[in-house]
Length: 358
Ligand code: OGA
Ligand code: NI
Image (cartoon, rainbow, N blue to C red):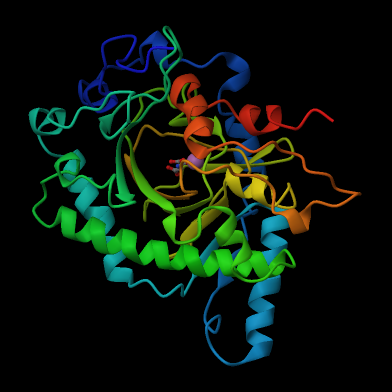
C-alpha cells in the first residue's frame, strides 16, 4: 500500500463548508445504513456516559479513594467511556488550548496549507484518514502532532500561529501525560494488578503521546454525512476535550448511539485497543463516531496516550489464565496503527480480527 501520498487531491472540508454549497458532494454521502438516524438520537436523549468526580483520588481518605476506583471500574467494564471532573487540570488551560486551536482553524487557508500532511506520518493539517482510492470521506479537517517521545516531537510540524500555540500545546500535553499516568495506575489496581503493571506493559516511561485536533465545519446536509466514522481508538487511553458549546460525539452501546453530553470542564476518557490487548479483553475499547450539524462548527482535542511504538504489546501474563487464555498475539503499535492509517476508520474490525487462532 502506498503511504507516500494521498490517492486523490485533498479538499478542505472547511473550504467546502464556507463556499456555501446547499448540498454536499457525493464523496461525503454515506450509504443509507450508515447515516446518523435523528430518531435514535432523540429517543436516548436522557442517557449519558458516567461522570466521575476525581476530587480525593490523590488524598488520604481511603473511603473516598476506593469509591472513585469503584466508579472507574464500573465505567471501564460497562461503558469503556467516562467523563472526569476535578481532574487537576486548570480550566483556563483547557479553554486556552481549545481557543488557540479554534483560532488556528480560522487562519487564512494559505497559512494552514503550509502544514498540509501526508499519509506517511500524518503530522500536520489533514482532511482524510486512510488512503483507499474512492473512499467515502468524513466531514472534518484535523491537525495531528507528536508530543512524546522527544525524538518525534518536531516544533516545525506544530503550528506557529496563534503565537502562544506551541507553549500552550506543550503545557497541555504534559498535564495530560500526568493524568493518564494516574489513570493507568487506577486501571491497573482495578484489574487486580500491581499499580505499575499496566503502565509497564505499554512501555513504562517510554510511552507515546500525540494529539489530533478535530475541526467539524457546518454541514448543509448533516443527515447524510458523519464528522468521523465509527471507530475505536487504536492506542492506549484517549483523553478528549470536547467543544464547550456543540455536542457531536456518540458512543455505541449495544445497537444504539448515545450522544455524549459533556459536563463543564470535563475530559472524556476512553479505552483504546491497546488497553483491550494488554488487559486480555477485561476492558474493551468502544466504538464511537461524530455527527455534524448545519448550524455550528465544532472543535475537539483528542489526546492519545499510546504504547512505546516498537515493543511487542501483548496481554499481561497475570491476566492470562486457563479459563482466560491469551486472546491476542504480540504486535508492536507501529504495526498495529498501519491499519487505521491505510484503511481509515472501520469500527472495531481491527482489534476484533486479531484474536489468537486457538
Ligand atoms: C477521535 C475522536 C471525537 C470527537 O479523534 O478519535 O473520536 O468528539 N474524536 O471529536
Ligand atoms: Ni476516537
